[in-house]
Image 1 (cartoon, helix red, strand yellow):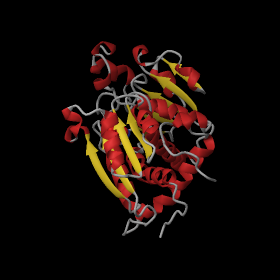
Image 2 (tube, rainbow, N blue to C red; image 1 turned 180 degrees about the horizontal axis):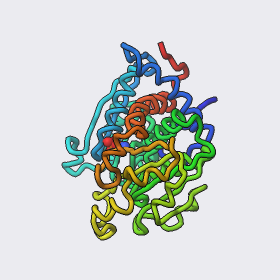
Image 3 (tube, rainbow, N blue to C red; image 1 turned 90 degrees about the vertical axis):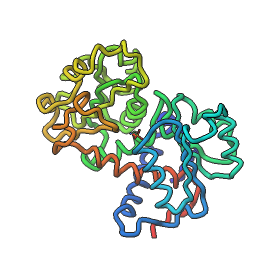
Image 4 (cartoon, rainbow, N blue to C red; image 1 turned 60 degrees about the vertical axis):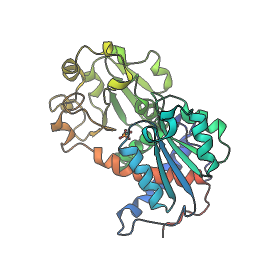
Length: 313
Ligand code: CP
């Protein structure tokens, strides 16, 4: 099946078939990451710019590793070390990058819509969204799907609870699109101030004000970080109170199914949304998510590149 997208701007634009193709392609790349020599020539001669205007550990590293394992030339630029600090606009920065003829720009930006803005203005290269403001984080949702499928053997029919600051979470938005498109039911829980009104309209989604009701009998519990950098302090009386009502701990996790998996996109606020006992416990699959991030991002870079042959030797 052909992949009909030049850019990856969000899960919202992807069909169930697109998502299936990305996951299956990522599955084929997984084995490369277990080899002694973790490199194939698939993207030899291609240039990928990772432009991160916001902090990142997992996403930036895994896009860079993914590009290198596919033999692309990868170059990184960050907000703090670029001429953005001298006042250059995003459009000018991007046009200057484009003049150097990259094939793919991977961008993380604090403003929702920044990858769309670039995709509309840059004709010569693909744009991949690595997280834009509170809007979308498509590669995170795809690696989450891969991790769920690895552990549960399917996505369709699963009950998935997403708990935390839904309003400011691009991960939540992308996961809601991805999970519901693949046939899961999503339960959202968080303080009333952190659940956007009308979020149910995104698909097969139910909203709970009480976390205990939300996680009762679920297959997957996904905890979100409180995004203090994106919200006014008034949304939250105190972190201690938040942990009491919306933190996952050894007692309340027993409400989920016995074989429920626990996920977190990272970085974690241990002792706030998740206790260390649970984060390091037997049900956590958090580092599996990170490992799958490399395979999924290899799949995305390969699919948008338009290269016809997926070389794995
Ligand atoms: N999950 C995630 O986006 O982590 P980073 O901010 O470290 O990339």
